[in-house]
Length: 145
Length: 176
Image 1 (cartoon, rainbow over the protein chains, first blue to last red):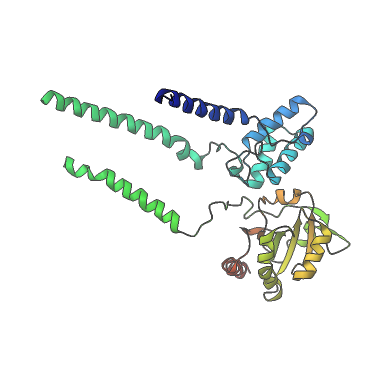
Image 2 (tube, each protein chain N blue to C red):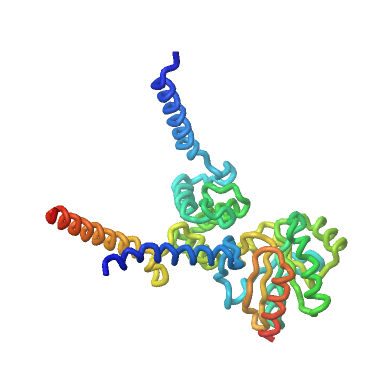
């Protein structure tokens, strides 16, 4: 007999399995074997930079994850720049000069992005005040009763 | 007084609703990104020319007169669609158009131009896509207006349509 509990457990296991496969499948890369640098340190640097660079074609992916041809070109370009002895800063500047700040997945801290960085904190503080104010009021109502 | 305050959340909601609705109905392409190259000098490059035997040297081509730069490839369907407008620029408006053949087979590109007509005064070959990266190109076709000082004045990502054709003409007339 299929009890309700049995079915629920089964559904639960299926959901967990799906979630876990999603989690592990993240480990597959778009980086192809012929792109990888011999020097492991340099390769690691390239991977770390690639993770911060937006793929301009699939805009919510980094070039490290994207299979788009432009992403591949940029990965190779970054690796070549590393081999030529450029530091990370120089590579980021090279890319933002051409594609703008948008190519960085994390927006830089600038005058024009102040609102972007600080509004969440301001909203949070306003929220805290509203909760306090609301609690005070309801306590007062309770006392009155 | 307090009862009147209760209307505030609804007002806020309405306000946001209007903003979202406005963003929804205005004519905009969310994947289109502003170019950082606007009002800057054209990137320098040297490469083979598709049609001529000599090299394509950017410093020789740019900075003399206003011209259009069009990134295209034979494998790109929208490039075929916009070709009629690119031809109109060079035939009707007599504006110099420089083509940059992006990651393409040169033989196919020459055949393509024979078949559809060649609007370009010269075509630079960008076999590896490196020149396109210097121009901040991320999706061809892309079209740039370069003024007589060699400064980029406008960039359009995607095929030139009737509307864009008019817009580009307007900008060219203004800069002349």
